Image 1 (cartoon, rainbow over the protein chains, first blue to last red):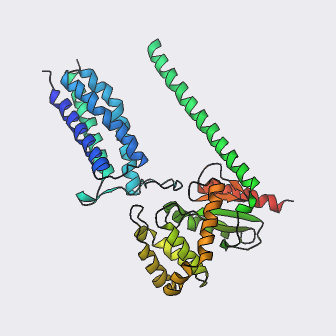
Image 2 (cartoon, helix red, strand yellow; image 1 turned 90 degrees about the vertical axis):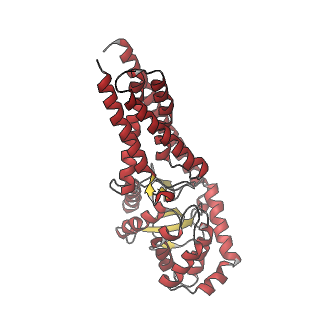
Image 3 (cartoon, rainbow over the protein chains, first blue to last red; image 1 turned 180 degrees about the vertical axis):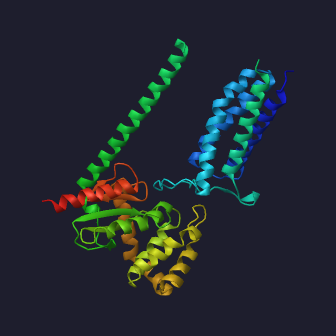
Length: 138
Length: 220
């Protein structure tokens, strides 16, 4: 076992928890994901496989391949969090019969906003992967 | 940079360019198709029952397809009001109903009933003000909207409820739905300025289009 493998495992565990958390909110609680949520899901879900395989075969390159996903997810989560906080001007889009992006609350956790959770998950993964890559670089 | 990296970068750039090009031409095509629909059936733009803001025979008409439960319509209401203040004699606003959200049809009927008590603007503004409270897209609380109209806009609710059951009110709503279907309006708010749609959605685009149409009338 190489140095720092636990960091990689930690990042995978976060991806796993986030993915199943998102699936629970969507498929069990039946909350419809908004467009921004969908893009964050697209960045998060593949990480389960990429990082899982990287941990399983103890392959440093897996962390490299995960980086673009983690970074794009992080950027989206930052933007979404600022949008929810009202810190970026909301670009008004016309209403269809869809879901609002600035008002997504996870009620069972005392009004914690889902974008905050997403931001925390992507941020932690970015840090863990950075530490892992530094520790394993020659 | 070796040739593999260049290949990856070039491929990425090509796909991005194709996407942007496709987006541009598709949007233009949709816009042209709608413009054609509108010019073929101008009678669908304003109906006898449609509420009009501003001078009735102004040369420039903004038609707004509007849903009382839509957040963007709520956000645009004061902006459009401000825009109309700049052209007190030349621009009128015609509201058409597009009840896309659950429960919106009831609120539209409430507005039509309010018109019969000369309380239209008051009820409209009270309802938009209180929209976050009653217009949850999952489970709208229409009773709350009624209460707001009664308490804050001074609507006689008993009379309004009787008027809402009136066939003419239902007919007005049905007519608006027919017209928006025929004109292929799928989003609210949709603005048509003298029959012309916005190139893309936004206040700046609306302001520019109105200015353009006003300039046309001013310079014969």
